[in-house]
Length: 319
Image (cartoon, rainbow, N blue to C red; front, side, top):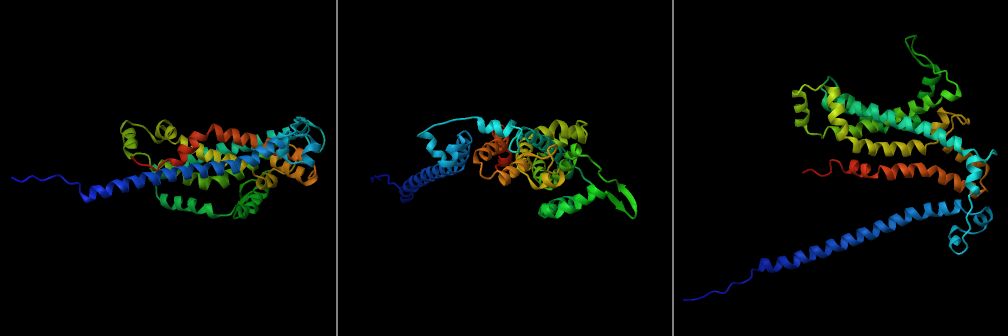
């Protein structure tokens, strides 16, 4: 009677080093990714931190030394912010422009969100003739440069719309305080193609069985959109809302053209451009004004960050 001794297969011996090597590579890749992320975060954070430190330093210190010398000789003053926000001179009164920026940005974010979400739902779940062509046309509008639309929009505001000698829409004869409407209209038009495209891709991925069940229960399209679709697309709405808020808040071209440079309608970016042009040597005011301008976008981004990440990752993993 012969006995056989169990032997370990060659395949099993080869699997162990392979698995061990995969674990080592995965660990190295994770460490490398973490290190790269930390370096990138520092590269983005250090200039902002230096801007904040500079905005708090006295005028003589900021003009003669770098912001990093603050740690060896710390001197703090709020006079820069006092001059920029509340002084009556040519370098102050930034607070009123701050309010103008809020008055321009908030409606310019809400209007595209409302119109684009309705249009995206209609293009995704409502059957009508020419739906695909409408979607292709909206998608194609994304490649139109913003600068090409400025002249047609200005003509639309100044003369209205006339077809075959018939006045379809009248001219916009607005005073300075009412020019916010022109900026809202312009930003909404520029934002709608991308917003519809983004939200359509999100809404079209919702389960069809959910929509069918709602229709069987007698729900109409408005009710389905309000009770089912809208809560589910909140991450996508937040993601686009952040993009649109940052774009409108930092915009100079559209606001300067359609709202003008008056104190009643000019946003914060127009005032900062004036400070840079007329007070280019007074860095303490420029740093204070620049930091004031980035406070609100930082608050918006940090408060909606979790929705932003969920919106970006939506649809990337299916289970």
